[in-house]
Amino acid sequence: MRLRVSSLVSTVVDVYPIYQLGLGAVVDIAEQPAMLELQKTYGKTIHTWAVDVSPDLPLGPPSLMASYTSDEQVPVAMVKARDDRLGVSTEAQRKHRQSYLPKYDKHREADQWEKSGKGIQFIADEVELT
Image (cartoon, rainbow, N blue to C red; front, side, top):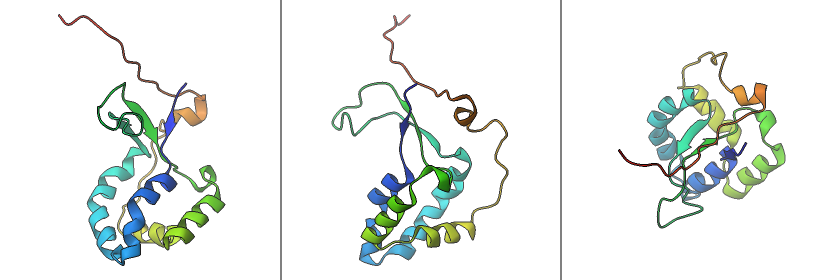
C-alpha cells in the first residue's frame, strides 16, 4: 500500500500565511464555499498532478490524498508550533467552521483503511488504444 498523506498542518502552512497580512476575515469568507463542498469528502481527494515530484509537467498516476480527520492523528505539538509560527489559531478556526458547516453523520463505510489496514494505489499502465 502506498498512500500519500497530505496533512492539514502542511496544507494550512501553505495557505494561511495570509493571516500575517491581517486578512484573516477575508480568507474565512472566501473559504466557506469550498469548505461546504469539501466537508463531506472525509479528508480525501485525488490529485492528478504531483507538483512536488514533477512541477513542470504532470507525470505519473493520480494519488489518493488524505488529510487528518481527527485530533488523534496529528501531534498536538506540531499544530501548536505551526500556530505560533504563523500567528493563527486552529481552535478558533475550528469554532468558526462549526458556525457555518452543517452537522452530518459519517457514512458507516467511510475510512475503510482504518478498519482494514489497506489503501488504494493507482498504477500507471501503458495500454493499446483501440
